[in-house]
Image (cartoon, rainbow, N blue to C red; front, side, top):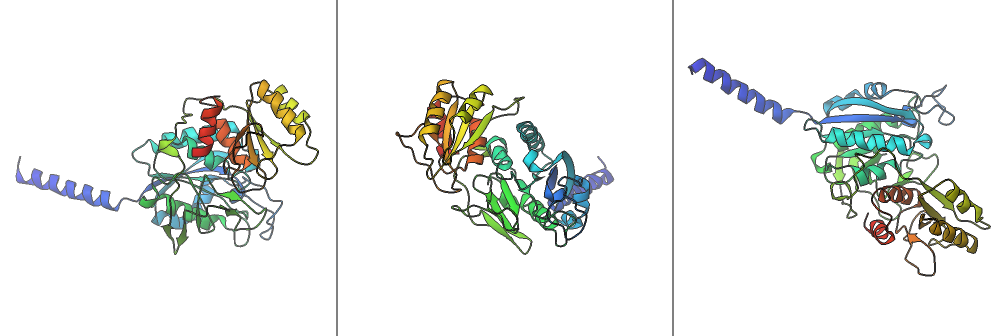
Length: 347
């Protein structure tokens, strides 16, 4: 081999090394709609707007600063308000995220989503994504057309977190309003305020300060790679409903669940998951029909402790919406009450 050939090879090798050291992370944005893609008739309108009016490329074009942080590309998975999110869509979303993260050239995924059910979808992916690469959800409380819309900054910060090497292995995250929340704990706490997503008992994983993520803690609950749940080959998810406990709550709600072939029921009980005599009778009938029943608390925080005097399993610290997601996922594996109860204490 002559000198010129050796020199050419050396230059190509040096060029390749330099490129690998300066390559920006590759982040894929999956859009599902929501207020972050919402549009209103005027720039002062923050209610009564159309959610999911804008496509993913419009969202990306609105934040050109992302190009300094990551190589970004977008895909449209859905374009709906998250009150219309379904089990079929979240199953499709989980499969797509798993497929993307299995690629060597993808470093992380950001998902835009409506805020109404933002405590549900991220938790489902927290249970079913088989990767330690970052998965970050973000959203907005004001439509994209509003004065001081929060969506663009939230999207920028979500991409920033997903591109950070220190974000790996932390489970699925939710980034809004400069805060980094864990999918296991974060929930919507106010109908309209910007600072609505909180973890009332557990706090945040970290914050974004001056455009840089600052992580403070990790989640010990089982998630992602350590999770036993794998939905990549599933075509449909089990049917689980929530029945709310209140004064005069009727037994016939359980008759409806049985008639519609529910496989699981989350009872959103008063206090620490207390069950009225009427609901106790309904739960007994549901259990006799082979339905798994789990007691959660409607209070919004706190642990539902085991109590042999009350029927059903307990949701630990999961609110009713998150408890439904875990029961849906657990029923893809088993109907064994003891094993399902173990899942609720460890996931």
